[in-house]
Length: 50
Image 1 (tube, rainbow, N blue to C red):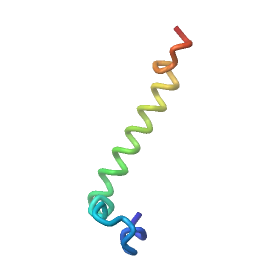
Image 2: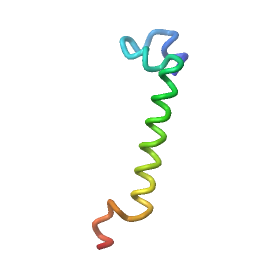
Image 3: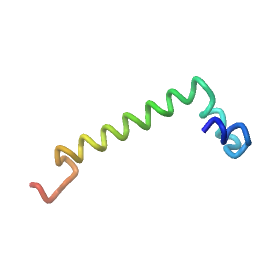
């Protein structure tokens, strides 16, 4: 992401990929992925398991 920001591909969104903002972005993506994975593993989002 830093390389994309350096060459200017991110435009106005570049501020989200500069340290320390990138830590918040990575944390949010990780928490979201863990939440989705946990809900799918327990069958919460699977209506066929009722």
